[in-house]
Length: 360
Image 1: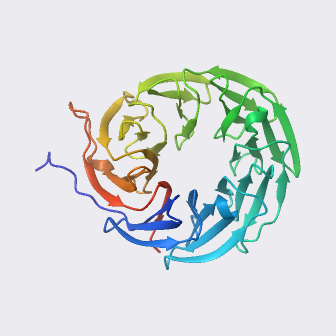
Image 2: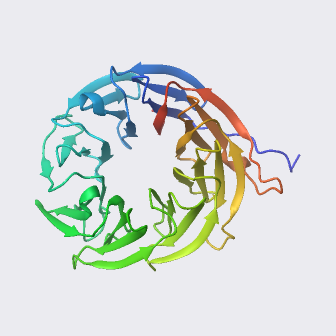
Image 3: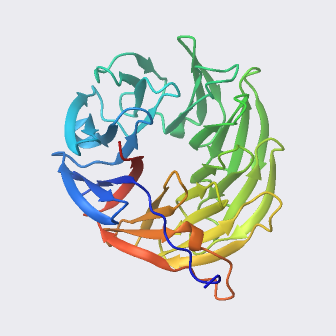
């Protein structure tokens, strides 16, 4: 009995899933592990995010240039913010008082306060943005926003009402602040490198060559490790941001893509869309960082969300229109390298983004 499979404790809350082709957000009850309902939006959602302290979830619909509020406590649609340009990405400010929407064609970031949901402050940019990130709230660079300018091959830094632009060369992709806020880490797509840009001096500190095109970046919660996937290798590149060094080169399936991290145990979940599985890698400090197991999850896994209590990893399968659920405490190293799928839940057409929110 002691060697038996660990029983699932569960998570009292919901997963909100953006069905990109279904014009709706699916709501999955994570206590019952069943679909509860679909919330119609009248437009195709590309992203969802949850507010950490108020009962609201937000869905981004680029087609009608809107942000839709969902009242999480009632599982019903709420207010709607209409933007002047089509958005491609949204993030919640570190203080939680506003949603910032990135509008590439409008060459702008637009602030939408959560209390009014009316577009307000606009940061105009010299070129189309491809990604952005906020400086940590508790650091000297508080209030700064780093913006990757994509095809322009530049980094824009917005702070104090001003925008500084720094040429980096080549096409740039994702951008993340280092956990101390002193450097912005930019994905150099053209030259397969990570560019560490010093915020105070305004200069490039290090250009770190990679074996992959850095399409996806995933930071460990403590900021000590950065994981990179992309075209070029069937592996995850482990980078140490404070040492600006490449660590391990971990094989993690075929054409790995989206990633997510659990805190306890410290696992990295890596989606492999071509092979329809997820690789689970042990990333604990002092541990042998290697693949623990793989789980077959469905067709076209594209997004992974981990519940706050590290009970479940929820994997969205774009091609098969479902959500695979892995029970994290049951994942252990086995000779067979296989992990058991807890359940599969149909959610709708082309699920692409999900957030998990505890029940009120």
